Image (cartoon, rainbow, N blue to C red; front, side, top):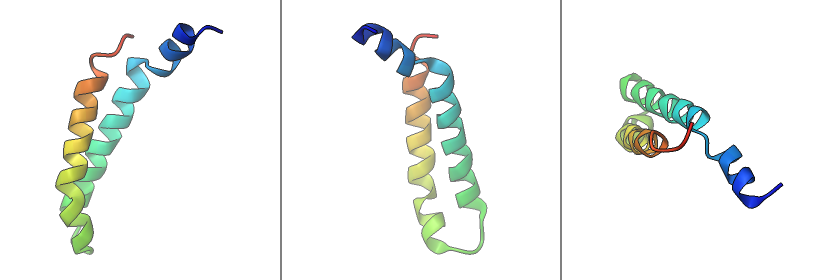
Amino acid sequence: MTLARSAARWFRRGPWENGATITIALGVVMLMQPFALWLFSWSFAVILAGTIGFMIASHLPE
């Protein structure tokens, strides 16, 4: 298997977009929970990381 085929297999849009969407959803859950202040404190960073990841993933090939 060539390097290009291996890279094309790892860098497909679908799984990366799904992972970024799950990360955004996790950040929203962290934002809305009333139990742990450290989860609330990190929620914005998690949402931001998921959003940036989704923006990058949307430029990957199908």
